[in-house]
Length: 217
Image 1 (cartoon, rainbow, N blue to C red):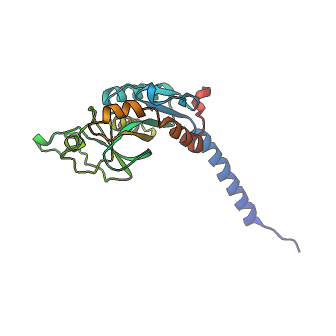
Image 2 (tube, rainbow, N blue to C red):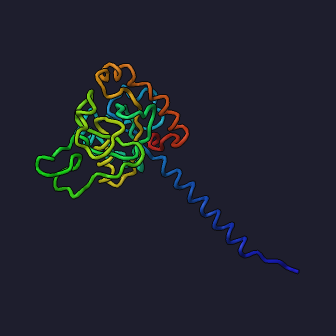
Image 3 (cartoon, rainbow, N blue to C red):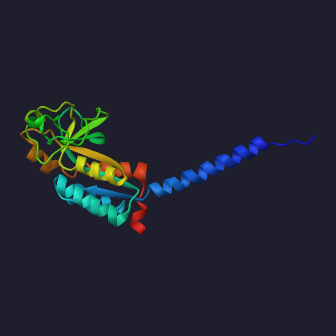
């Protein structure tokens, strides 16, 4: 008796196709760019991907990343930097929600954290919530007063980087290392801890991303 296994052959072909597609997508995903505010935050990370330094603040971050995306045309932007802790979050954290903490138009009837006339609303808090603003926070209760969302971390660039990536249709992820507790000791703590998270972030790059193909382009 002669046996035919068309289903098996078809299944093998489909699995092979999925495998090839998965490899191609994995290779494509390696075209990533690292963006940070300051060189002091990224010791030893140049071996993984091109690093763009934007400088401090939302405007510098937006301009720097916009120019970098136009130059490199990455498939993925990875932001790494330091942040101050408002809640008990510690260590290296992947950000789940981005807000603009210092956008405040409550005087004319808009919710804090929302740009007037944008039609936007505050997002649901998913994962670690990062509040970005153009101020170094040493009094978190005062700095976040009136925000209708629980902020875990504060920084000065993350929301702007996320917003630019969203606008240009580029995948974006952000990792923040806790450098201080956003209190009166924050300035000294930041100076002491600014580079300490780079080794932990390098482990994430090794495990999840590998070396960027942009290094060879």
